[in-house]
Each structure stands twice: as structure tokens, then as C-alpha cells.
Image (cartoon, rainbow, N blue to C red; front, side):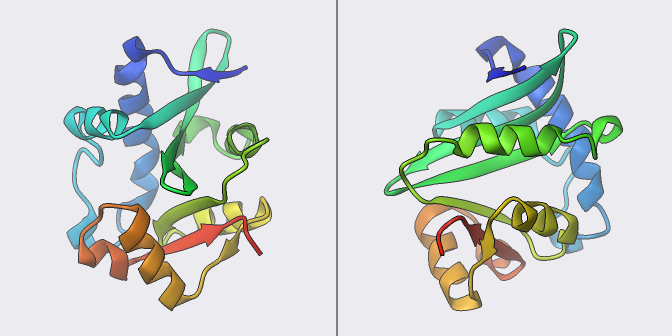
Length: 160
């Protein structure tokens, strides 16, 4: 079942993000990695900035989370993570489809250039990579990330 996460579930959201983010360790630039990957204070900040988290729940256990954020004239998919032991079971695809269904605004997704598995996942689900020039403009317009993260990231869109 997919549903909106409850305010009381921030500990579980944070746990899942930090479990699943291990896939990025030794993949993304070392200067962008930190432990924990997302401290609770950062998660609460993201929620305060309008990221609505949804979860995939099975047998009363949350197995995956994905956020969506309304920013100006687009929607951003944010913080998409599935528990390490539950990967490759279609949970991420179900969450993504749920969040993008019936959206009227263009959808953008930012991720690390080195996260080829994530890029492949989004492309398999109908998203296309933006050009380097377009990516730079989009990351600066819709995200609040440091210049180093702009350099080491990509953006995908559901627009042709």
C-alpha cells in the first residue's frame, strides 16, 4: 500500500534514507558523502521546505519512501529510497508512478552523475536526461544546492 507518511514516522523515513544511501558511498565524490547521509535535522528541514513524503508499506512495515515537492512551476521528486534488503522488487517504480500520476506540472528529478543505477531506473520509467547546460539552469532555479553538487549531479525530466 502507498500512502502519505505521518509526521510521527520521521524516524522511519530517516532510517530508510540512511540505510539505502549506502549505495552512494564510494560512488559519489568523497567530498559530497557524509555520515549519516541525511541527519534528522536535514530531513526535518526538507519537510519544512515542503517535501511531502509517501511510503510503500507492506505488513505494517515501511519498505520505501519517496518525496515530492511543489516548487514554482514544477514538481520535484526528492529522496527516493527503498530499504537495501527490499530493492529490485518494484517498490520504487510503484512509488514513482503513484507520485507522478495525474500531475499537471512537469516533473524533475536530480541525482548524482555517478548513480548510474538511479539514472537507469528513472530512464526506464520514462524520464530523459537534460543537457549539461539545461541541468545547470534547472539545479540553480529549483534546488538549493552548493555549486559542487551542481557539478556532480544530473537532472531528469518527464518532458520531451
